[in-house]
Image 1 (tube, rainbow, N blue to C red):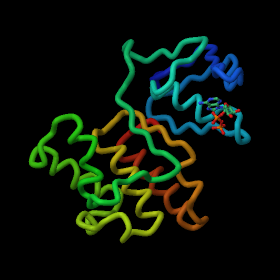
Image 2: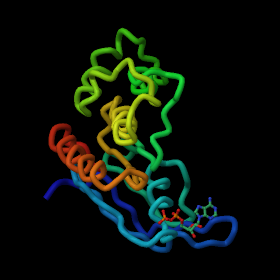
Image 3: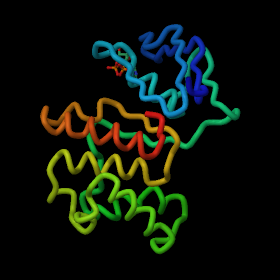
Image 4: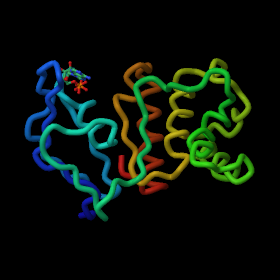
Length: 183
Ligand code: ADP
């Protein structure tokens, strides 16, 4: 089996409201693993993802990363959360821009990531010109732009129709095979 990328040890989260969202969660995530958390609404899946992403601190327990510090993370939300005023290319460029890459320095990587999700012909389109499934693929491309070793997804396809969902599931498995990303 693959080596462990990330281990959660007895992670708990109690919100200020008193809600105990997580209680003693143990989880091991292997390199290049595709892992799904399943459970009813409100059982703590998003909370676990946010803690893994470092967006939220646990109230108890530990998150241990291989190498002692968190890996770069890509995060895909249920809604694509694209910038409506910016073209597809610029939406995917955003995380690289925030890291200080010039457009010229980022161009090859943005183009390659758009090709990977099959949207290279739509680089100059605006989000409103795309279908829901295509917008989600832009969102995935944006999350992959910095080539993170781990991609966290919080019910990314929940708002899409069944056929699009099946197609994107296939796309994701192909991306994982091509990039070796842990998802
Ligand atoms: P899931 O993703 O499985 O639907 P969540 O992790 O979103 O579950 O929520 C787990 C529990 O924690 C729920 O009872 C939810 O209402 C509560 N919760 C989530 N976020 C907050 C918050 N910021 N403040 C207070 N309670 C929260």
